[in-house]
Amino acid sequence: MARRRSRHGSRSLSAPARPTAVQRVARRAIVALIIFGLMLVGLVAGLLLLETRPSNESASKSADTRPSDAAHSAVAMFAPTIANVALARGPTPDGMVWIPGGEFSMGALDPRSMDHGGNQAMDDARPIHRVYVDGFWMDATEVTNEQYARFAAATGYVTVAERKPTRAEFPSAPEENLVAGSVIFSPTSQAVELMNHYNWWSYARGANWRHPQGPGSDLKGRENYPVVHVAYEDAQAFAKWAGKRLPTEAEWEFAARGGLAGKPYVWGDEFNPGDKWQANVYQGDFPLQRGDRAEDGFEGIAPVAQFARNGYGLYDVAGNVWEWCSDWYRSDYYARLPAPAGVTRNPQGPPDSFDPSEPRERKRVHRGGSFLCTDQYCTRYMVGTRGKGEIRSASNHLGFRCVMSGKPSSELAPRNARNAVNATKTLDAK
Ligand SMILES: [Ca+2]
Ligand SMILES: [Ca+2]
Image (cartoon, rainbow, N blue to C red; front, side, top):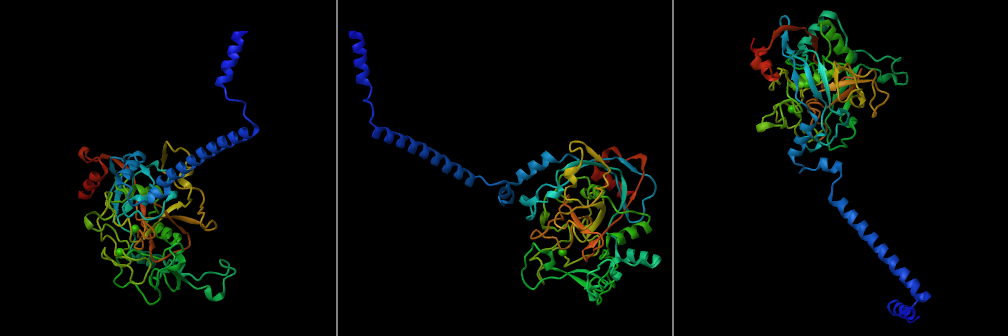
């Protein structure tokens, strides 16, 4: 009994007195305040963490992203080019070089953190994927005015830009707009919104390949310039006449890479190594009148082959004029390829065209960029990036070059020349 009392007594002494209703309410309020305080601290800490950790987008735009980061990604996503070693069968066609074909990694990384990478993510050039193409012959240069003139004289061919658009093609157009012509770059008198390319392109009646700047211009002294104002069918017609064809997008990229793998530029990692220009592009404020400073030696278009050739002996695969490829353009084509971990052999492109920015237009692929490319607007002089154009449209910065399927011979490139670049040098020396 005493024990029980004692217990009871001790419990009574150590335990607080039973709280009153007011005390209970106060205690609950304090607990609630503590929980609220902890949540607040957590929230603030989370926000601070987000503030100091850039998003993927801002990280890729950040100017201080270390090149080694980009290089690391490139190493992780691109694998070496494995060029075929067989030489071509038969004599070299005039003006062409042998592209040995082989396996390579196709596509482009987001260039925004790279040297002169510009501000576009180039989502349509990913995922980077493995492709094999057979060997083929390719024109060393863009097709020139002189070459196109020979074709036109021999065949009487009339290009799309030289034909009067028909009422059937444009049922609702006013009669005065149904005139033959093409699109010309028209520099602006003041800075304009760069999201709208209509700000610097205008339709010029009478502009066509014979009159690249409109009716007042001609080809005198421009024989060795690339032909321009050619729609897809105009390029195709030339190729057929010449016994050639237009390259697939995969052939074009394999050839443009010249045996290198994963490089942002046809010539390597830097845009302007040793301050030496490697391609005819645009320097200055785009697209202003007198904005092109021509530091590469050329304001506007240049004659072909004025810059160093690439590893396979091709000129101007970056810049000067865009080049038609035979593939339909789809922005999601790479993402839809069936075997991302495998090798796609001799891809011919998707069965149809789709550009989400202009879904009703039927477009084929353009490659290589032009004399108007600049990191202020469009950096598609970077190898692996993709362009596109409506198939009946032309302009004064769009041309093409052709390819011919070739047969490999039983003769192999010398063992010490079996990397792509050296093999090309050996071929050129023959
Ligand atoms: Ca230039
Ligand atoms: Ca070009």
